[in-house]
Length: 301
Image (tube, rainbow, N blue to C red; front, side):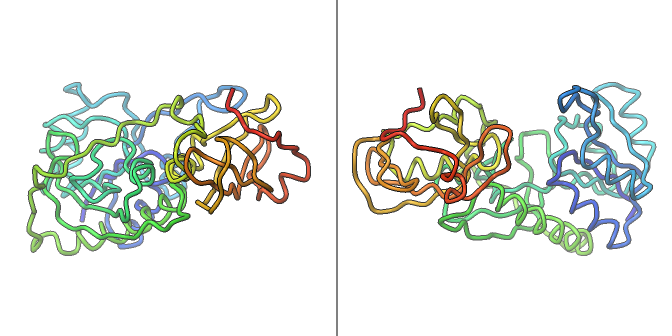
């Protein structure tokens, strides 16, 4: 097919590779404009832009698609379909209608659960037993279009958002190639009204660990915010990111260190298994504790 690809972050890159690998004619790649990043705050191209340029594809980075000129440029590509995954801009109706077969979105949840910006984070933080990928025919509402294909995967007791991110990205790439091959025969299934939830964008204020919460909630927070933005607590005035954990048997005052890096919570305890100190790489807690002395009671203040 003659297609337009629209995506920006790392999550989208395997999808672009899969479409090119399947032999589709990617006539243009749309992604967010380069953003200031790093210590020098120089504009840095997105992962999709870098990959598209390496593949020799035409890249476009409009700040908006609301203007008539941008919409005319998009329509002028005469695409059969647009594939959209974590693009980051709202698509006006004129853009949605331009390709012959419309726009297909790869969404990392089992719709209608977790529409919106942070479906993987929210699924882990809510303790969902499973998540997955939906290939959706895009409509004007937020992630509200009919679903063409879906596939589920279990969320393991120690899975992090990072683990699921990589798994779902690979799954989405495979599923959208399948959807394009079967597109004329697929039946769109409207999403039910029951079960709609919204995955609000992660606020960094959520990342501070509250040890008075039950261990189950603390564990979900740690895994759900790993690797970014990272749940954290303070140790000797240092903000320590907590990246992996599991619920264990234990009891004590909230924040009390029960041995190693096992910490009592409001109900039960969590064993922290991976951390990251400021300016350092992630490391297992056994290694981290060689140079880090924990106080008897952890406190985020």
